[in-house]
Length: 190
Image 1 (tube, one colour):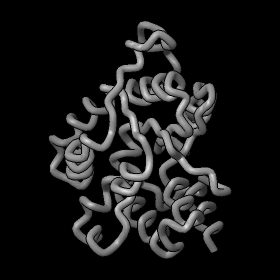
Image 2 (spheres, rainbow, N blue to C red; image 1 turned 180 degrees about the horizontal axis):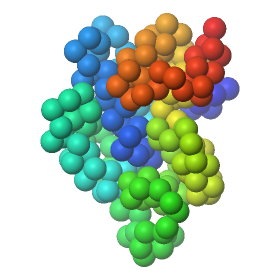
Image 3 (spheres, helix red, strand yellow; image 1 turned 45 degrees about the vertical axis):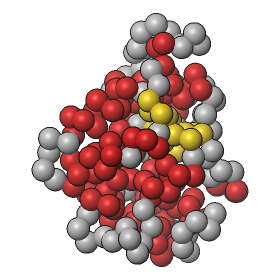
Image 4 (cartoon, rainbow, N blue to C red; image 1 turned 180 degrees about the vertical axis):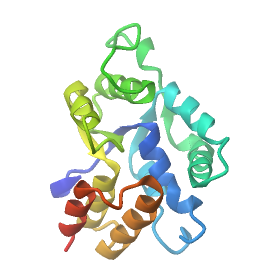
């Protein structure tokens, strides 16, 4: 999305979808009057997920917290994304490769590569997992969720203040507050 490039096709992993679902699940954030990043993603891009992501979301709904509510919101929006098994496609291996990531991320990367989407949306932006995701992607760009939100501001879909509020709202629940990566993205909005 940076520099005017738009994400028209996306594969998303579980953590990214949950993060984007947090504002609607947060009692202190009103998605009727403020931007809803999950809704924007699902209405502005063709989004695909592997079945593993749906299973992980279903597992999260058992929790009586903002993450469970966010996962429920994502599942409720199921008509707005496509569930596609990467291992039923000719251009992927018959079984899950070992890349050092969880099953949802691995299957998401396999699907992103098979579909040759514009981006793979993930919350992996800290530690060694970012490098593993980056190395496993064969064409699609890695798009960390905070980057997506800041790009929405850079491209005029939300204001810089709205992006900051979204990142703060999500970050409180997703442990983004002390992330140097997130801090750098927010500084670039000024």
